[in-house]
Length: 444
Image 1 (cartoon, rainbow, N blue to C red):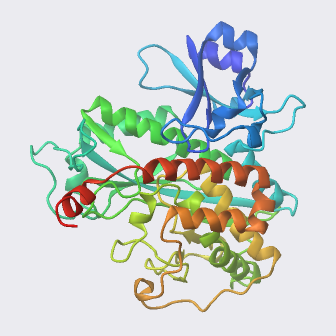
Image 2 (image 1 turned 180 degrees about the vertical axis):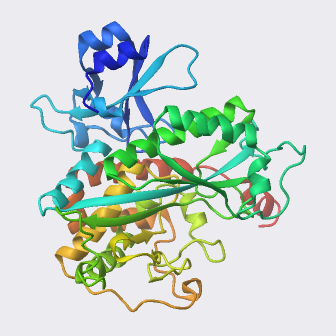
């Protein structure tokens, strides 16, 4: 988008601007400014520690990560991210900002900067990564008591869904008013949503995005989550991007399709004769080797690991196969020019910037190290060995110890991210669950 920001604000008669940055959890942080102040300032300042918020609003010791004085960072608008907020009562815009140090260098803890850092590695080799996320989420009935299990919402039939409704058109139509408004909001918001299907769980949906640039897609996912939640509230229901919101239902993933093109637009995963290239197999091997070591990014919460369990329609390992949905790494059937790899491990609860950065980093390392993948799996990988960390605490240890990933994503970022995740885990670990009260209170 090359149109000056002032012209965009004038054309859309914008009164206020939501100036936002994604923190490490993917939550939008920032300020709402009147149009004139936004134009006059040209930037906003926020404490660097804002990036270190946990999902429940705590912060680890900031000193090692941002300095003892908790200095400001300079946040500059990325005009290409300008969008009208479609649900606002008055004309409001949202603009995503990039975070800079006072010397003009990127703030290493910023998720957008981490993704740019990985993309730059590809750019230096004349490559351009292309990604396409698939996002699953649940619609659930409103409830105010967090101790009660979530329930499917009631649609136009007046009854909640019963049983599994995979790919059911009627089940989607049960919430036509919601999806019609969501579609309208996505169009106004320029989110590039491609298809909608009903997934396996009760009230579970999936949205696919058109493929494109990783940073642009991360921006779209970041904005899409907020759009879905806002639309749901307008229709008297909740939308959740928890990885495993219901005990007896499957979890929600953000599958990431990825390929790489060179300066001529040729997919480097295919040779000129149409066969798979060495880079294609090196990339898969990189995912197999490094995905287990970046799991705090791909499965960032305690709840995330409830999805990655046997018999939950989710991967438990990093085996790969052709058109094999039981594998953590799937290669869809396609023409040579569309040859791609699908990472099925990430949950939909990820920070999209970091999840894309991590999976692209894993593949990049595989190509640089010329790794060889294991044999492709043609049977069910669900019956094979569990290869992923089973708990967040174990995953944090693996990420912190992985030097190659630390070099690519930035050692300072990895340390700060692990500190945020450790604080979240510690907070969770103090909670006494209903299971413990039910089974231990009078029996042990």
